[in-house]
Image (cartoon, rainbow, N blue to C red; front, side, top):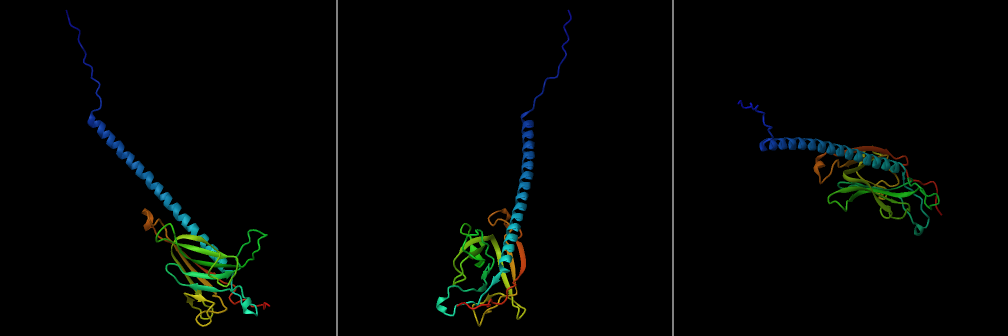
Length: 242
């Protein structure tokens, strides 16, 4: 009696533990590479958006300062009785680090409410102000007062015009000498420039380009420069107040 011949079939072979570990390592490396690529793209997009926002913030600040400086004025109008004097106009520019300061009167006030009892005159100031929430950070502040008084440097409302600045430099072109001056003061008769304004104001505004506390701190700063012409250079004196 013949025995049936058994045909040897190949046995199904599974993955060994070493092969599984190698596969997991390869998948992990691919996942890390994909995550790094997406993370880098996200950081790049956020960086570009942050720079665009900073440029927009700086341009808006420069545009506002330009409009308000172009309407600057000083007036020699005063009552004959000095005891009745209740307001005084001036244009005072002083130096500081890292931000200069300028205080002046302007015809740039905009009436939002037609029934409001205010005119187009206002007191304005631009200066550096420490950020109360971030140590070592200076913001460009704007002070506005719709009521003219005897002290052009105080009163009114203060708001932030541009955040985190590295430099706010002002220079004033003297029409008599043709030179750029670091300071201007219409209240001083001897050392200042009484009863006259500069023909131009040069503004240099440098914004910090990245986060001071983050990975983007080393990014290049944003530098904006402009020259503003002042149409009203002499003090207004077309009437005498009684």
